[in-house]
Length: 359
Ligand SMILES: C[S@@+](CC[C@H](N)C(=O)[O-])C[C@H]1O[C@@H](n2cnc3c(N)ncnc32)[C@H](O)[C@@H]1O
View 1 (cartoon, rainbow, N blue to C red):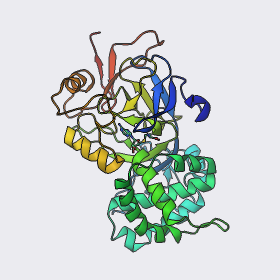
View 2 (cartoon, helix red, strand yellow):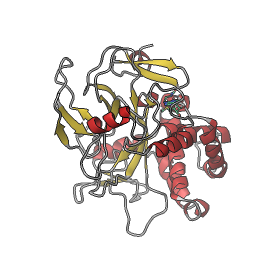
View 3 (cartoon, rainbow, N blue to C red):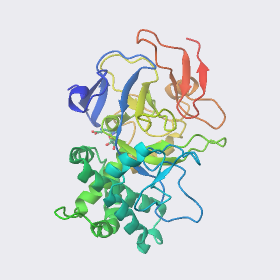
View 4 (cartoon, helix red, strand yellow):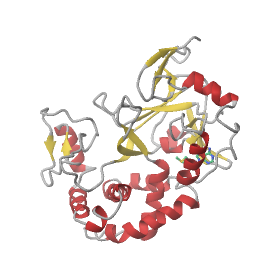
């Protein structure tokens, strides 16, 4: 089945198929070139990575809607109801009005205030749990403002039983708090199972919208986003595509996920991303894949990695991993001007630097 027909318009270069041992996945429906953009996807849901506890003097530096860096004194606007400095300051009147009608509705505003006044959550729980509560508010708000997008969220893969158990335990804590939010009349509070399932969807499918890389190679997450189509990419430790995002760039669609090919791929080949930076060590990857996504790498994949010094991994590292100090981002060619030509300028998806490659 063509993804473009069934999942709201993505490149015809992709096809959604069932892949043994992996569930659904995306394969190339035609030969694709290194640098080619095979997907541009807008988020169905975004939420801030800030914990709910107000830290003295620490405010979000980002627009509460598009997550762009706020420029001080540049006409920022607040939510008329809560003006909360963590997630209710907007970079423009456009973001303010979009937020008030979608991501920061009066219900979200009220619910976040309620959660902030919930000491068992903000004083006794770690940041991660508070961010999960924030996500659940965003998810239940989605059910109200866009039932079809909420159905999409529910239909995403939630990974294996290992993470599921963790999510269920988190739901046992969060569910009573979430159930006491002021749900509008006629809308019942979610069940414990739905709450746990939503947490699984988040764990397996959320992408971090990243801060620029610091000089020490650190890159923190400023917000999380879940995408309708990008959620279908499976993981490979030697990916053939990678994500680019330009959160602080452009005006329209700055939270869109752009998936670009790292190298040429023939028709029918699965297109995979690495779910974490490609310079993670092999044991680190195995642990993350099992803990967070519920599968072991190698069982269903063509290439098995026995260590970090095997040939395919070394080749990938030399050719496609950014060698700028402390970076370790993935390099992909700039998009070709027409898809018959591959450019030999590689762009790093973490530090943004450009490097000319000998073809
Ligand atoms: C973001 S979803 C990817 C799409 C998913 N396969 C589906 O059916 O919707 C992540 C989940 O896909 C599965 N998955 C991804 N990569 C895999 C791989 N290399 N081997 C086995 N399962 C994989 C795991 O269940 C993982 O939790």
